Length: 219
Image (cartoon, rainbow, N blue to C red; front, top):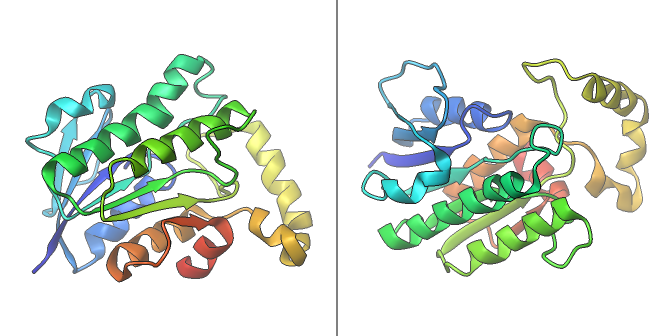
Protein backbone atom coordinates (compact mmCIF):
# COMPACT_ATOMS: atom_id res chain seq x y z
CA UNK A 1 0.00 0.00 0.00
CA UNK A 2 1.38 3.43 -0.96
CA UNK A 3 2.51 5.61 1.92
CA UNK A 4 1.77 9.19 2.88
CA UNK A 5 4.63 11.56 3.70
CA UNK A 6 4.64 15.02 5.25
CA UNK A 7 7.40 17.46 4.30
CA UNK A 8 8.26 20.59 6.25
CA UNK A 9 10.66 23.01 4.59
CA UNK A 10 9.77 21.88 1.07
CA UNK A 11 10.82 25.19 -0.50
CA UNK A 12 14.27 25.10 1.08
CA UNK A 13 17.62 23.97 -0.30
CA UNK A 14 17.36 20.32 0.71
CA UNK A 15 13.58 20.12 1.18
CA UNK A 16 12.81 21.09 -2.42
CA UNK A 17 14.98 18.25 -3.69
CA UNK A 18 13.47 15.82 -1.21
CA UNK A 19 9.94 16.78 -2.27
CA UNK A 20 10.66 15.99 -5.92
CA UNK A 21 12.17 12.63 -4.94
CA UNK A 22 9.10 11.67 -2.93
CA UNK A 23 6.72 12.70 -5.71
CA UNK A 24 8.65 10.49 -8.15
CA UNK A 25 8.89 7.55 -5.74
CA UNK A 26 6.21 4.89 -6.34
CA UNK A 27 6.27 3.91 -2.64
CA UNK A 28 4.55 7.22 -1.85
CA UNK A 29 1.00 7.83 -3.01
CA UNK A 30 0.40 11.09 -1.17
CA UNK A 31 2.77 13.90 -0.13
CA UNK A 32 1.55 16.66 2.18
CA UNK A 33 3.47 19.93 2.45
CA UNK A 34 3.11 22.55 5.17
CA UNK A 35 4.86 25.85 4.50
CA UNK A 36 4.62 29.60 4.49
CA UNK A 37 5.20 29.78 0.72
CA UNK A 38 3.93 27.62 -2.13
CA UNK A 39 6.37 25.17 -3.64
CA UNK A 40 4.81 26.01 -7.05
CA UNK A 41 4.48 22.40 -8.13
CA UNK A 42 1.40 20.82 -9.66
CA UNK A 43 1.27 17.08 -9.04
CA UNK A 44 -1.58 14.62 -8.40
CA UNK A 45 0.17 13.29 -5.28
CA UNK A 46 0.74 16.71 -3.75
CA UNK A 47 -1.44 18.36 -1.10
CA UNK A 48 -0.21 21.75 0.06
CA UNK A 49 -1.13 23.91 3.07
CA UNK A 50 0.14 27.49 3.15
CA UNK A 51 0.35 28.28 6.85
CA UNK A 52 2.34 30.09 9.50
CA UNK A 53 4.68 27.29 10.60
CA UNK A 54 4.92 28.88 14.04
CA UNK A 55 1.26 27.82 14.38
CA UNK A 56 1.84 24.25 13.18
CA UNK A 57 0.38 22.78 16.36
CA UNK A 58 -3.04 24.13 15.32
CA UNK A 59 -3.12 21.84 12.26
CA UNK A 60 -3.13 18.48 14.03
CA UNK A 61 -6.26 17.33 12.20
CA UNK A 62 -4.39 17.57 8.87
CA UNK A 63 -1.05 16.31 10.18
CA UNK A 64 -1.53 12.62 9.40
CA UNK A 65 0.95 10.44 7.54
CA UNK A 66 3.23 7.41 7.70
CA UNK A 67 6.41 9.48 7.76
CA UNK A 68 7.41 13.07 8.48
CA UNK A 69 10.47 14.73 6.94
CA UNK A 70 11.53 17.97 8.62
CA UNK A 71 13.97 20.05 6.57
CA UNK A 72 13.24 23.36 8.28
CA UNK A 73 16.18 25.56 9.18
CA UNK A 74 17.60 29.03 8.82
CA UNK A 75 20.95 30.79 9.03
CA UNK A 76 22.37 33.68 11.03
CA UNK A 77 22.58 35.70 7.80
CA UNK A 78 18.87 35.22 7.07
CA UNK A 79 17.64 35.40 10.67
CA UNK A 80 19.79 37.63 12.84
CA UNK A 81 17.23 37.85 15.65
CA UNK A 82 18.04 35.02 18.07
CA UNK A 83 14.48 34.67 19.36
CA UNK A 84 13.15 34.16 15.83
CA UNK A 85 16.04 31.84 15.06
CA UNK A 86 15.08 29.60 18.00
CA UNK A 87 11.41 29.64 16.96
CA UNK A 88 12.45 28.28 13.56
CA UNK A 89 15.28 25.85 14.29
CA UNK A 90 13.92 24.59 17.62
CA UNK A 91 10.23 25.42 17.73
CA UNK A 92 9.05 24.07 14.38
CA UNK A 93 10.80 20.65 14.50
CA UNK A 94 9.70 20.10 18.10
CA UNK A 95 6.09 21.04 17.29
CA UNK A 96 6.19 18.56 14.40
CA UNK A 97 7.57 15.81 16.64
CA UNK A 98 4.81 16.44 19.19
CA UNK A 99 2.18 16.12 16.46
CA UNK A 100 3.79 12.84 15.37
CA UNK A 101 3.43 11.50 18.88
CA UNK A 102 -0.13 12.78 19.23
CA UNK A 103 -1.27 11.32 15.89
CA UNK A 104 0.59 8.02 16.11
CA UNK A 105 3.08 8.72 13.30
CA UNK A 106 5.98 6.35 13.97
CA UNK A 107 8.67 7.72 11.64
CA UNK A 108 10.20 11.20 12.02
CA UNK A 109 13.32 12.45 10.24
CA UNK A 110 14.84 15.85 10.97
CA UNK A 111 17.92 17.68 9.71
CA UNK A 112 20.13 18.99 12.50
CA UNK A 113 23.83 19.81 12.21
CA UNK A 114 27.22 18.28 12.84
CA UNK A 115 28.41 19.37 16.29
CA UNK A 116 24.93 19.88 17.74
CA UNK A 117 25.08 19.77 21.56
CA UNK A 118 22.58 21.24 23.98
CA UNK A 119 25.39 22.51 26.25
CA UNK A 120 27.53 23.90 23.45
CA UNK A 121 28.94 27.40 23.85
CA UNK A 122 28.08 28.06 20.22
CA UNK A 123 24.52 29.39 19.91
CA UNK A 124 23.80 27.59 16.62
CA UNK A 125 25.03 24.20 17.88
CA UNK A 126 23.31 24.69 21.25
CA UNK A 127 19.96 25.43 19.58
CA UNK A 128 20.25 22.35 17.40
CA UNK A 129 21.28 20.24 20.40
CA UNK A 130 18.28 21.37 22.43
CA UNK A 131 16.03 20.63 19.48
CA UNK A 132 17.42 17.10 19.22
CA UNK A 133 16.84 16.47 22.94
CA UNK A 134 13.25 17.76 22.79
CA UNK A 135 12.51 15.64 19.71
CA UNK A 136 13.88 12.51 21.40
CA UNK A 137 11.70 13.19 24.45
CA UNK A 138 8.66 12.43 22.26
CA UNK A 139 9.86 8.80 21.95
CA UNK A 140 8.70 8.38 18.36
CA UNK A 141 9.61 4.75 17.51
CA UNK A 142 11.61 5.53 14.37
CA UNK A 143 13.33 8.86 14.97
CA UNK A 144 16.31 9.81 12.81
CA UNK A 145 18.40 12.92 13.34
CA UNK A 146 20.67 13.77 10.43
CA UNK A 147 23.77 15.78 11.32
CA UNK A 148 25.30 17.02 8.06
CA UNK A 149 28.41 19.11 7.73
CA UNK A 150 28.21 22.33 5.70
CA UNK A 151 25.75 21.89 2.85
CA UNK A 152 27.34 22.71 -0.49
CA UNK A 153 25.79 23.51 -3.85
CA UNK A 154 24.21 26.32 -5.82
CA UNK A 155 21.18 28.03 -4.31
CA UNK A 156 18.58 30.01 -6.24
CA UNK A 157 19.73 33.31 -4.76
CA UNK A 158 23.30 34.59 -5.14
CA UNK A 159 25.31 34.80 -1.93
CA UNK A 160 28.81 36.23 -2.28
CA UNK A 161 30.11 34.53 0.88
CA UNK A 162 28.76 31.20 -0.27
CA UNK A 163 30.27 31.72 -3.74
CA UNK A 164 33.71 32.27 -2.21
CA UNK A 165 33.25 29.30 0.13
CA UNK A 166 32.34 26.92 -2.70
CA UNK A 167 35.27 28.13 -4.77
CA UNK A 168 37.65 27.43 -1.89
CA UNK A 169 36.06 24.05 -1.26
CA UNK A 170 36.77 23.09 -4.84
CA UNK A 171 40.46 23.60 -4.13
CA UNK A 172 40.79 21.99 -0.73
CA UNK A 173 38.06 19.31 -0.88
CA UNK A 174 40.57 16.49 -1.53
CA UNK A 175 42.06 17.16 1.92
CA UNK A 176 38.81 16.03 3.58
CA UNK A 177 39.31 12.53 2.25
CA UNK A 178 42.02 11.81 4.76
CA UNK A 179 41.89 10.84 8.42
CA UNK A 180 39.42 12.46 10.80
CA UNK A 181 38.68 15.35 8.45
CA UNK A 182 36.29 13.29 6.33
CA UNK A 183 33.36 13.93 8.66
CA UNK A 184 33.71 17.68 7.96
CA UNK A 185 33.60 17.35 4.18
CA UNK A 186 30.87 19.58 2.67
CA UNK A 187 27.85 17.57 1.59
CA UNK A 188 25.40 18.06 -1.27
CA UNK A 189 21.68 18.57 -0.54
CA UNK A 190 20.87 15.78 -3.01
CA UNK A 191 22.90 13.38 -0.88
CA UNK A 192 21.04 14.39 2.28
CA UNK A 193 17.67 13.98 0.56
CA UNK A 194 18.60 10.54 -0.80
CA UNK A 195 19.77 9.47 2.65
CA UNK A 196 16.48 10.57 4.23
CA UNK A 197 14.42 8.55 1.76
CA UNK A 198 16.68 5.50 2.16
CA UNK A 199 16.56 5.62 5.96
CA UNK A 200 12.77 6.07 6.03
CA UNK A 201 12.34 2.93 3.95
CA UNK A 202 15.06 0.75 5.44
CA UNK A 203 14.97 1.60 9.16
CA UNK A 204 18.54 2.47 10.10
CA UNK A 205 20.02 1.14 13.34
CA UNK A 206 21.04 4.47 14.87
CA UNK A 207 19.09 7.57 15.85
CA UNK A 208 21.82 10.08 14.99
CA UNK A 209 23.40 9.91 11.54
CA UNK A 210 26.54 12.01 11.16
CA UNK A 211 27.70 13.60 7.92
CA UNK A 212 30.13 10.89 6.88
CA UNK A 213 27.40 8.23 7.19
CA UNK A 214 24.88 10.48 5.41
CA UNK A 215 27.35 10.64 2.54
CA UNK A 216 27.64 6.86 2.47
CA UNK A 217 23.91 6.15 2.67
CA UNK A 218 23.07 8.90 0.19
CA UNK A 219 25.33 7.47 -2.45
